[in-house]
Image 1: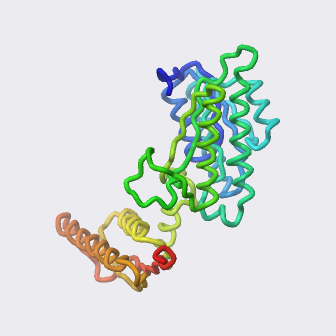
Image 2: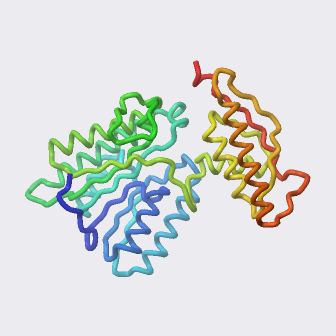
Image 3: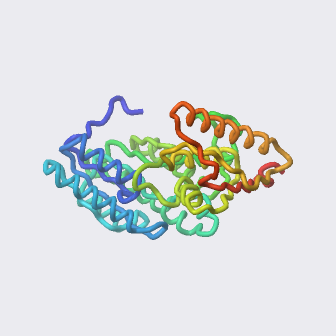
Length: 313
C-alpha cells in the first residue's frame, strides 16, 4: 500500500488504451481537473469494434487539450505487445504514473479469437511490468504508481454475492477472465520483487456516451428498436432489457410478451413473470400519476427466449 496518494499535477502520465472508452474518459478528466499535466496516450486502434468511435474519442480529447494549453497531450499509435515500442515510450517520456487500460476485452470473443488475448492481455501487460521495473535503473525515481485494469470476470463461478475483493477468484470460466486473473498475479509478484506500487481495478460493466458498441445495452436497445427477438441467458439481462425499453421513450408504455420459453429446471420463469408484471404495473401507475394515456397497441413486441439449460445441469 502507498503511504500517501501520488500527486498528479505536473506529472507525466502514460495511459494505454487511450482511445478506449475508459481510457479516453480518464484522459478527459485528467485534462479538465488535474492540469497542468503531461499525458501520453497509446492505442493500437484495432478493429475489434468500429475504429470510427475510437477516432471520435481521440478528437474529443484533442479539443479538450486545446482548451487547456497548460497541459500536454501526445498520442502514439502502437501496441503494448510490441516490446520495442513500449521500451521507447518509457525511455523517451519517463512516465511517473502508468495506467494500463489496453487489453483485448470481451468474454465471448475470447472463445473464437484466443490469440489476441494472449498477445495483448499477457504479453502486453508483461511488457508494461518490465518497463516499470527498469524505470528505476541508474538511480532514476521511476514509476511512482502503476494502475491496471482487471475485471469482474475474475469472480467466475463464485456463488457468493455481493462480490468482495476478499473472495477467492480461482475459478475463471473464460480465457478473458483467466488473463485478467493472471494480470493480478503478475502485478502482485512484480510489486513484491521490485517494489512497484500497483493497484488493480476490477471493472464491472462500464457504460456511457460513446461507450463500447459491443456491450449488451447497445445490442438490447437495437433489437428492441427493430422489433427483433432477444436471446438472453438469464433474468438479470431480461430486467436490464425491459428497463432499457422503458428508458427509450418519453412515455411509459405497456409490454406485450410474445413468447416466453424458459428452463424447466429452475425458477427462471416465475422470476421473469414477476419482474415483468411489476414493471407493467409500474408503467400503469406512472401513467395514471402523470396522466399519460396508454395506447391500446404496444410499441415494442418483446419475444424472450431464455437459454439457461446449460447453467442448471
